[in-house]
Length: 349
Ligand code: FES
Ligand SMILES: [Fe+2]
Image 1: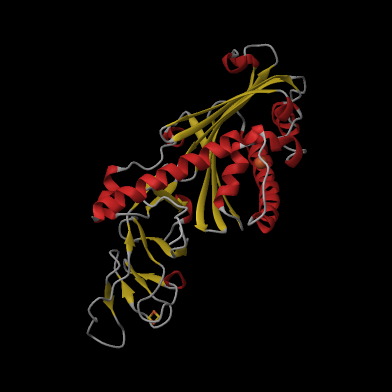
Image 2: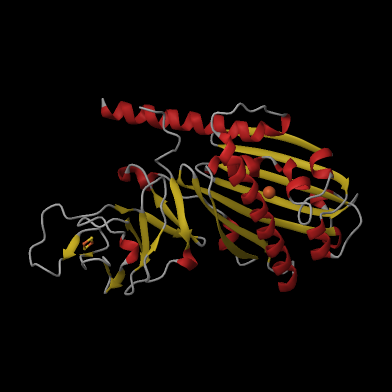
């Protein structure tokens, strides 16, 4: 048996709240086909296996009838628990006619789904991004997609020295790679990189948003949490005015963003993102500009990572110092997977 590369007993995210309606939508996670929908009567999100027991048609091609999910092929219906409750061509429901249902929690604009042992899902909290439930912060979401192993996206987020090269026209500035004072820390289940760059040129997208083109002090605090959450605290202030502690009149940008790298399969990734800006900090136009520049930059990442994926397997890699955070993440996840495997084996004894 090959070693697992994914944690099971974690809350993953299968989609954005705003995308889940009374039209079923497919969202595979960990190579398992899932279908998501909302029941018309309560608005509750339901996640079921996206595979009909009859002839394996994807149920995401069907529709919601009452609160049931109806297969789009021969019309078999399933209730919210996944039990087959109606077969149009006969009265009797065969024993065992049931598909898997998945525990889910809707929180802060995300649909979290439990992929592991369902008997322990209540003992684990889904990821918390408090800015998305705080009226002092305004949030905007993005849904992206990549044909790559989600770990390559996490590598990308944990090594921001790529900014001056991959994002020249948006969020890159040469000082981000060359002038950072960086530190990497790891605790039980987090990896954090803290980077400060003093007196560097501002990024083009930031000049466009703030109108300030002189040198800045810039910071990036990047924190990974399993199974695929990367929280970035990023910002800049006028150079020499106190960095993160600058007075409001010297503060240029002070933001939180969360990237979600969710393994759809071993080679495809559901890439979700949310940015939070102080509700009274930026105008709508400024927010639009930074949102658009960010999404443009992420698409630049996706192009590179998809091309990287084509060459990745089986070829030797050389690590450099800036890989420290990414390598720490891989060690952390390996250890957590090992712990999970061992506790499963203990229970099985
Ligand atoms: S495949 Fe679903 S009803 Fe036949
Ligand atoms: Fe990037």
